[in-house]
Amino acid sequence: MANRLKRNRLSGGTVSAVVDLDAAIGFIVAHGDAVDRARLSWLRVGAPPQPAILDDAEVGQAPDGGWPAIWGGDVASVDATCFRLAELDDLGALGRPAARRALDWLATCQRPDGSWEEDESLSGWAPPWATPGDPEARLYLTANAAFWLTVAGHDARPAGPLDHRPGGVYAGVVHGAAQALVSAVNAEGTWASFLATSWLGAAVLYRQELYYESARIQVVLTDRVRDMTPSDVTAMASALRRVGLSTDDTLLAAARRRLAETQRSDGGWASDDGEAFDVHTTLAAFRAFR
Image 1 (cartoon, rainbow, N blue to C red):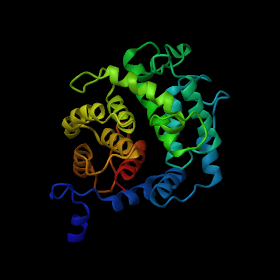
Image 2: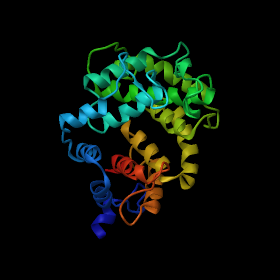
Image 3: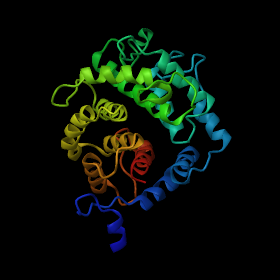
């Protein structure tokens, strides 16, 4: 036990609450399906998934490169495409042709002001966070699309519209999105949108080397962590870790304490979307603090 506590020390010499990742692994193996276990294997040791699993994860892609949402018929959705990219990222598949087409589609969907919005034809069908014409939804979709273009731009193919700005393949696109995000954040670091917008936006700004602008949002989030659900904490922590924020950072230290408080005896964490999604939340926790 003493060695385990030493391994979980945070900056400043204090000992953190312990997130039991071994128990989390056990929960995922016991309750997850083949795709969940493949995601775990990739996150743990970089084991490539079986081709059939990748094919299933990529099924349903529209000809233009995006993926439709279950509520949107055959029209490609920004939100649904970002969701698929998150699944593919956990399988090490962002470099595959399907993901590359999706990322290119996202880049071409950016509006002149640097933002993203769902197709107008989805009005009346889209949920609140994806409603065309809604400014809160627009800001969320902008943060979400920019996040995945940020991640892919640093990890993917070396060819593309590279320039001197941070962002790799999609540098210019992400730069425009970052400016749109900065203009939408208030001086005190708050935002007029959904909670997920904050950590996705903070991640984009951090990777764009807009550290002050990102830190303003992180300060607000640190104050809110104690009241966040495990779903929100795991999503926030995994997003910020994905762009390189240290686990010793104040916000992620607070996130780890919150997850230690809310981890169940079976090793998992509860999802806001119901028991069927507990494995997804637990995988996000593992991704953040593995």
